[in-house]
Amino acid sequence: MDMLKTVREIGFFETGCNLVEVIASEDVQAKAGVVMPLPEQALVDSISDIADWLAAFGKEKYMFLSPEISIVDKLAERSSNHEAILLIPCDMDPEVKERLKANIPKSMKVSLLEEPYFPEGFYPGNGILVICGYLAGGRMMVLPETYRMIDHYSGFWGKKVFVPYVELEDAVRYDGWMEIGKDKISMMWRNE
Image (spheres, rainbow, N blue to C red):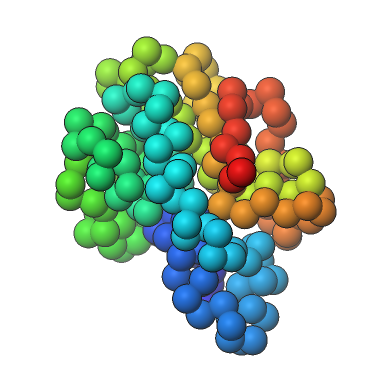
């Protein structure tokens, strides 16, 4: 079970929802808990609130730096007029791309965009960049490919929001994860 591979394929929130269902298993805790923070039931409950928060920005296009299928599903429930752009790393395996294409929600316009390309018609007035990872002691942590994409798309002058799938009180850094500076984002979702 390669949890980070699963995250790269279906996003933090979908992976987290799947983990919550089996989190009581010591085997799952041992394998998943080594590479990423383990989610709690609050994650499942917060997805609708996150979709509401994103929709409140009044944007038409949402560019996700990870394939957050669960959030896109909830956005689609709010309006089919929204468009989600799921940015995928240029080195993603073609088989994984095909599986991702098969899993994207059909209830709104969703497209896959391979880095380093920039989506057409995506402007600060109509678009928002959504970055997901985890929060550890106030530090925003992301996977290396997300870090690279944040740097590549830094020229986007619109809103860039960080949505943590887990908020840890301690500043725990899992192997391979990278911290992004607060200057890289405009706002952060906080589960209140």
